[in-house]
Amino acid sequence: MKKLILSTTLASAMLFGAAQAEPKMSGTLEMTLGSGEHPASSTPVNDGTTIGWEANLSVSSSKELDSGLTLKMGANVESGATRDTFDAPYMTFTSGNTTFGFAQDTVFTIDDSTIVPSVDGNNIEDANKSLGIKFGHNKNTIHDSNLMGLTQKTDVGSFTIAYSPKVSDSAMGNDSDPEEAAKSGSGTAYGFKGNLGVEGLNAVVYKNTLTTGSLSTKEIGSTSIGASYNFGSITVGAQQTDYDDQSGAALGTYASGSSAEGKSLAATFAATDQISLGIQYAELSGTGITKTEETTAFTVGYDLGGALVSVRQTSVDNQGGTSGVDGEAIELRIKQAF
Image (tube, rainbow, N blue to C red):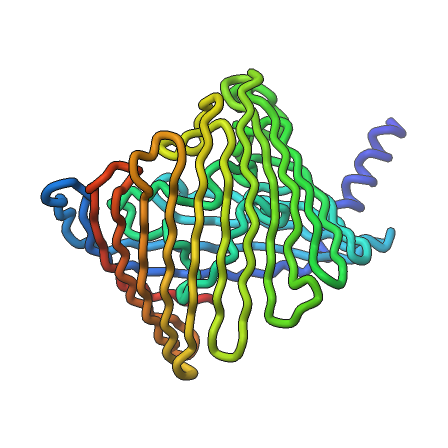
């Protein structure tokens, strides 16, 4: 009976303490009007025009614990073709410049870092999906998996290490059920992101490895390094990612001895307080790539004062590494955060 009373008292104290944490809510809403085509070697197939939506709602709280640690936790509700559910949960504890905890798709996502600038915040491979662009700096990653991590902030940037015991585990609701996710190997990611003490500079370097094929020794990995620099109204950046034991035509899939290389360059120019211009270029080469896939995007953005309107034209040559398979798309985006 005493144990039950003690347990009840402890649980009540924990709930009371959690209730004192101040909840916060934020989010974004993005509308896209896009027209694109399936790349082809002769006449590309016109896929018509469509209107799409992406909504993200984030709920979070922060509390100073009696131990001196700061507890932060939260999760997102994100819309999409396969979403409309809670995801990206995190629970972290911070002491000074050190943060440790548990998360998914947030906080410790060092291996999801793309450093090249863009006008509308979208990577070049996020263009009209019908283009089927293979390029990407984060094609094999553990950040979508449930993981634990540690970040140490310094005067020149932050060092992060993350570990996922089961890379196939990306569910939020398995609630300590090891059978909920299929058997798979583990994964690690570690790296640095910061300005190195130079004003206007933003640099990143990271490496990640993960096993595939249900606890097998089929290990794939990638190493990425990049930097961007802002001087006045102009920002420029470049990044390179090398993929090991995977082909360029199927990044993220184990292929012994195969390799691929992704490069990207970008520049943005703030012409006025409201108007920004941007150009992005990316290429992917390596095993399985007959001819280098090349993607180019031009973007114009207009700040409405609380909402961003952008128009982006994207073209891809040799899509998927096949010579002569080309296509293009154009998109109008309106994005607002609250």
